Length: 77
Image 1 (cartoon, rainbow, N blue to C red):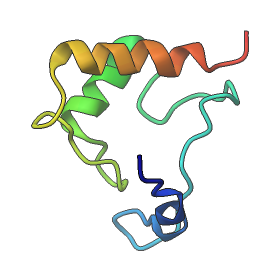
Image 2 (cartoon, rainbow, N blue to C red):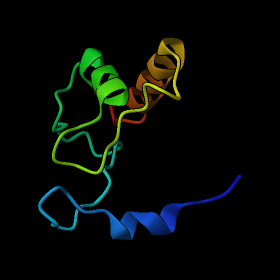
Image 3 (cartoon, rainbow, N blue to C red):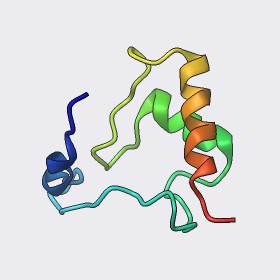
Image 4 (cartoon, rainbow, N blue to C red):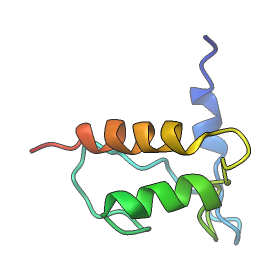
């Protein structure tokens, strides 16, 4: 499996500002909202103003929910 970690340093928002990937272990609030439904919506529609694209063409709804549950499991209790 290839690692694309080097791409993180090239992320920019719609205004050209450098942005960093969210740390799901931090417990900080998400830009999109903190409910599971909010994460699912971002996977399926993308996040306007950010480099986060929609994955609706490449994720099944079940796979998107699996990702939601995985990411929520990373947060510190």
